[in-house]
Length: 50
Image (cartoon, rainbow, N blue to C red; front, side, top):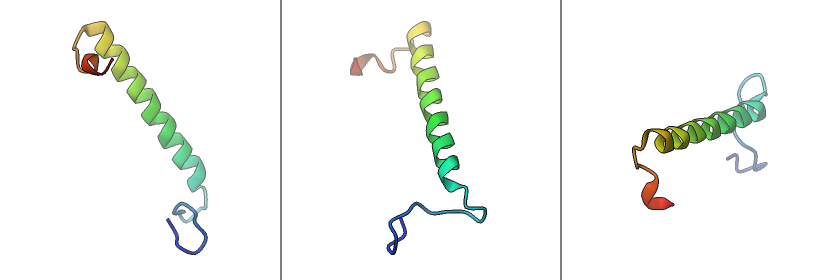
């Protein structure tokens, strides 16, 4: 965080907001894929939490 204007750090081309959104979406999809695989293959990793 930048103390002066409370924005997320930007890169040279100024397109950081799209990259943050893409990273968040990729994380969500990866988490969904892991939860699905956990359920389908019976790994039981997430079972204690549900």
